Length: 236
Ligand SMILES: C[S@@+](CC[C@H](N)C(=O)[O-])C[C@H]1O[C@@H](n2cnc3c(N)ncnc32)[C@H](O)[C@@H]1O
Image 1 (cartoon, rainbow, N blue to C red):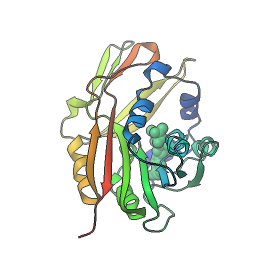
Image 2: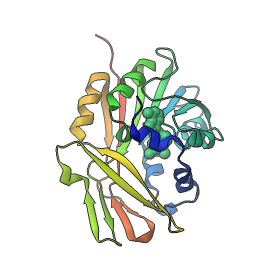
Image 3: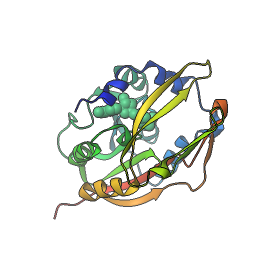
């Protein structure tokens, strides 16, 4: 799989700055609270966990802090360099993971599915490398997210897109005035439910009904994240 949006992430130095320059005010970082909540009932001690599309590796590190053996994979050398300060890493695309069948107790696939053109390929790979009853911790930009930009007075609402699969552009404004854009695919939740059903059983969904996340420059987002906990489907 090699698409324009893969290339976009390959050497993303500005994304690293977003993570490290704390673009988001700490009180607004709902992603981390949501992630902690999502994995709270998972007994990570001694487990093997893979963080697919690990970015800077912060999510994999949460498992490691709870006693898991963690490996992160990503296609971006820049992001892998950051992640490897936190967890073990290997460069690999999500649709071709360099691991044998049934190696892991759990996988995270966090905020990656919406940047992939065919996330089903990655979900298939993830299910292959998970043990029977292995867990998948999943997150995407919420299909219900609404982002208000005070500067342009525009509200971009994912809800308006209803049943269409659409490419969207997210603009990140850095504190120093620079900005960059990221593309992602907006898909309604049934799209993902349908994909999950092929490989996983959905155990829990978390879509906080009202999260107001404040960005600098007068932008804020409401219920930005959708989280899900899934378990690998047993073969019949
Ligand atoms: C929005 S970031 C999320 C990173 C991290 N999981 C997090 O939650 O902060 C999307 C990540 O997907 C990675 N990515 C994009 N295409 C990929 C692919 N085909 N295979 C693996 N990772 C990919 C990017 O390099 C980037 O790290």
